[in-house]
Amino acid sequence: MGIRVAHNLISANVLDFIELSPEYSILEIVATRKMIGRSLAELDIRKKFGCNVLAIRNGQKFNIFQKRKM
Image (tube, rainbow, N blue to C red; front, side):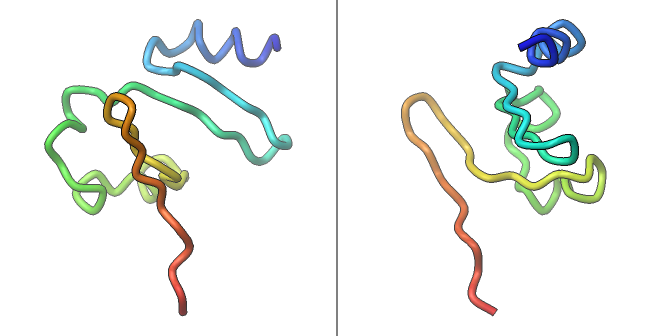
């Protein structure tokens, strides 16, 4: 619980934080103005922040990304 509060204090964009382990967490964030209208490829979130996008929510609608077949 303390870690969740700390993350919320550090970034106003963090809506929720779930720590799965010391190495892995799930965060729900608010998209910044720089993110809106850009594709995930353009944002290059994995390279810039070292994280993966699991889903995108727009209002009550969710787009959940599934593992691609190799």
